[in-house]
Length: 406
Image (cartoon, rainbow, N blue to C red; front, side, top):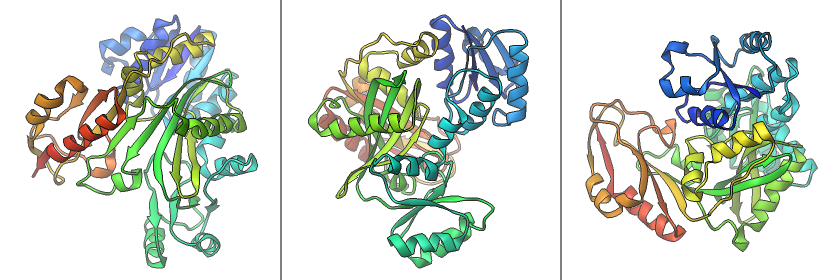
């Protein structure tokens, strides 16, 4: 089988997908923006061929590259795993008559307003929302639903460009900052109070083959706006417990409503006074290397399972659910350059045997802004068989480890 994979070398965990495809017997043809000579030996070793384009989100350039490959080989699949690549890849996939997710399927999972309307039509609980092309339309939504509200790009990912708005003064400021003049449509949503997490699946032929529940501490908007917090994403091994039943049922209902077949899914949810509310879905793996946590916690090569689903239409692995696993992000004290670390040796002495991966940039490294995400600066990935004990350890790490910048 010949599989085209878009952006095989960046971000770094992309190499895991091409490695897995090769291991299950695919000829992997990469399309990316970097010159071939810039790819490292690991990525080159997984690729059968490579096409360079100016931008993988340029539909014309991507189409031309795929047609060049089709001039040499029959192409069985065209795959991507990055949110911003999904729509252009889907459009080219259809134009080149390659099997996989259709443009309409991807659009329903990319456009937040369209997505939520489809789900409401299937009686799936989700926040009130609408698209808005003007400030007047946003204010009309506030008049019907009240504050707080959330404003975000219709095709955004994560918390990028997302704002919580609590009153008229904040609304005026945010609308002035992001614009709502008819040139760029935005999504307006009811703010849902409650704890935030996500439900991920590897779905094969419309059936959930593997699933995972993860939690944010604190919720994403607070984490991405508050420097002193060391935010955590933790995946639970308690997914079989009674409390998760409703979430798993809801996730399967979303997959059915959106008519998804063979794809990873990443679904955000809230649980609070109004019960569980679906937030949004991506037909892709989660970001920030979350699949690495799933692999470590469950004694499985999830990338290999995905590749087998793409190439063979089936998977063979079993999740052990042996561990919970988490990523904790350590924020620099200010923007600038990393000067030193405090508390790292102490935590290493106490919990080093639980840390399976970490990244502490050397002193002198420029810092990244808080809103750059969970793996932008220093971070550690930690596992433990008990969820509550892992949360306690992560709290201690967050309070002890300091990244001093100047």
